[in-house]
Image 1 (tube, helix red, strand yellow):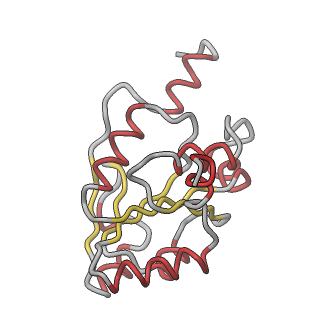
Image 2 (cartoon, one colour):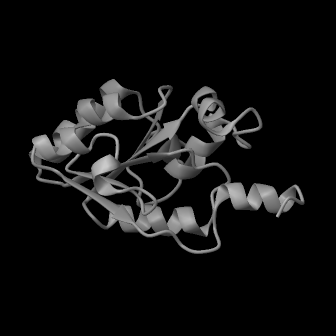
Length: 164
């Protein structure tokens, strides 16, 4: 399998990702889920995703579609289109699946995939994370990870535009 095929093999529709999730569960492989825009991948993203992956054996990353990013962050975002953001994430060795979602939150993905661990960045209170109640109800864990100071896509964009 070529590198391109390996990356494409991680960008999955919900039906295929759900099938893989069932297989991972059969072998008691703890699955971690996180989500975000992941515009302009930077060292903060890489550290966050590596730490998220370390919380289990499999990592699924939900990625906001371009339309949902515009609703959440404004008309000038995302900088990189969905296909590019998904390809970059799928290229990380510690990411096992990447899936897009068009809603403002990944709640339907969380309910469908039933991850063992739900993780977000440290700017969230655990009880306020979308999917908290659902994950806790099926016996999963919900946690946050700290940010790496000095890295944010918004900060990089502001710096490049001369606004910082």
